[in-house]
Length: 159
Image 1 (cartoon, rainbow, N blue to C red):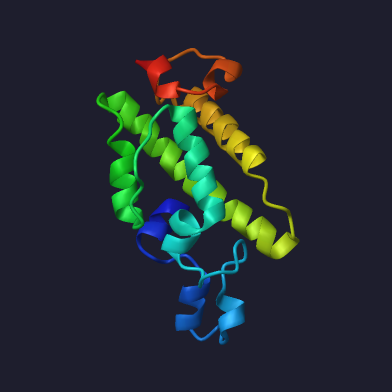
Image 2 (tube, helix red, strand yellow; image 1 turned 90 degrees about the vertical axis):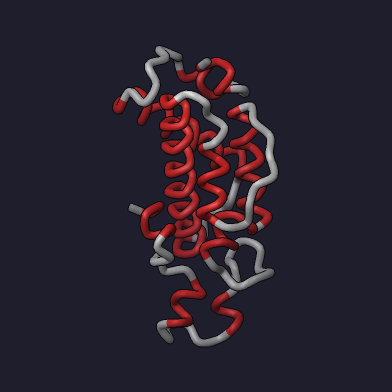
């Protein structure tokens, strides 16, 4: 649901709240993580230095390297294009959706509860969450234990 709302630009990010006259000043609208730009979907999920660090770690985990587009629809297309087989593309889509959902969850924890941002813990949570989703929904039938799943170059291990 979060990824769908993101793709429709319907998440209550600061720029959207300003459009609805809920936030009125520039300070309230800044990204809570970096404080450099207004919080928008593209900034929050793709451009913010904190988010960029997360995507770098996710790419290392998957064993892929690419320049990431700064627009969410293009980012999704590029991210899922790493997979040649349908099962790998489905896994990449699930990972992308999971990353978006957890990014939004962590943003809200930080904004409303003051929890600190820790990239390593954040990426570990993504790995564990996706491993459990794969076990439940059998996105790829791999039989990997959690330790192997969490190690780098995941796509190579699945081929």
